[in-house]
Length: 143
Image (cartoon, rainbow, N blue to C red; front, side):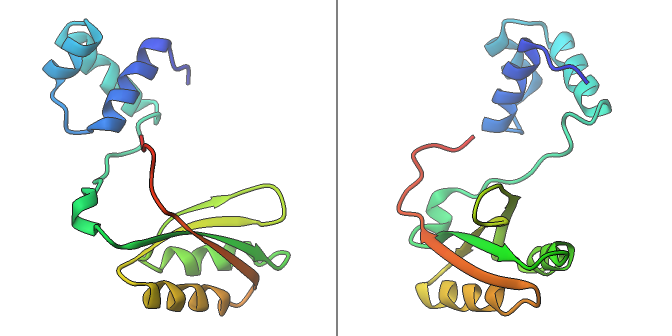
């Protein structure tokens, strides 16, 4: 799987708006629509583009609480912990990281009380040794 600089530009546009038309993408990249469509199909076939998703407008969740929840997991229990976290819809993303924590989750809830409950539920998962949370004040940008 090789990703060219042109592919990187195409992926950047799709990250901004996965529903952008082929014609719009072609205009921005100064390529033909056929070339753009071929590149997208190739990237999908190669598994570079694994799927498309929905980004909810900030206004829809204005005032919601977002937090990075750092999680330390007992040895050999990570698969079960990941499975339990995947079942929680409030956990939007989960990353395995190096350093003092094993996992970092992005939790999103409507209220502080619900965030508190979410962190308690995460801490109660069998195999979770410790959690530490940081409330997100603002996003400077997202791609």
